[in-house]
Length: 111
Ligand SMILES: [Cu+2]
Image (cartoon, rainbow, N blue to C red; front, side, top):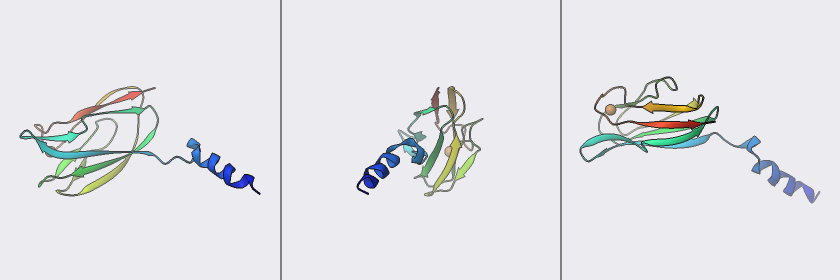
């Protein structure tokens, strides 16, 4: 019976029970430009990640990783969370699909 707590601890520490990794992207204004930060992020091919999109600005802005996630409008002051299946290794740019001048970034996917 004394084995049980350590067995549970072992199970919980394995990746079997790991929740999807979560990363927050925040939309803000910096040096007169609207930017999604961080502008770079690294993921593992095939992993499922939860992306929290926080829009701190006063207008609706979009978030899209073409070929990876659909274009999501995030209303002013709101947060949207999407779950994304990370594709094969490579470099995938992301952007605000609503405003061409809006500064995006890119994610790096490693095997
Ligand atoms: Cu925008």
